[in-house]
Image (cartoon, rainbow, N blue to C red; front, top):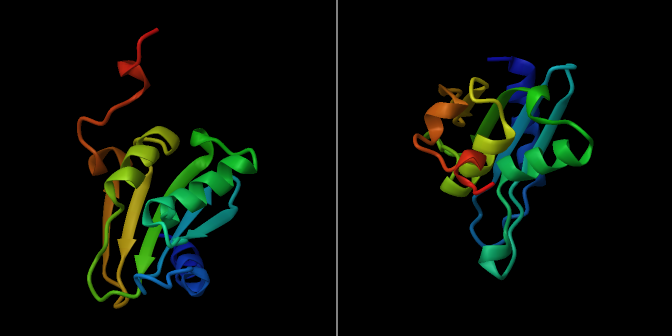
Length: 133
């Protein structure tokens, strides 16, 4: 795992807006051109309108014109001393917006890391192939 990428995610944790859960999460994407884009979770009093760090980072990258083929690696981190993986909604979005073989690193506050390929996060994922033509 790229230590610069992990540090970028750790540094972004302070930007999480989590007044309700007090559970900051940060994500960082390493792109093929070497750029790193970070995202944090942003909560809302109407909980369903909150956004996770992984989706924030991905939507920011796409808003800047990057696409699936540009994403090389993802880091997700929290202040927890145990690993936290992307939620189901993020896994579904990552299935569509991140290459299947891109590495996803889950890093805890102690530096422990669990790494999986993106496709391993959501077996039997719903995809564009299931949509009618």
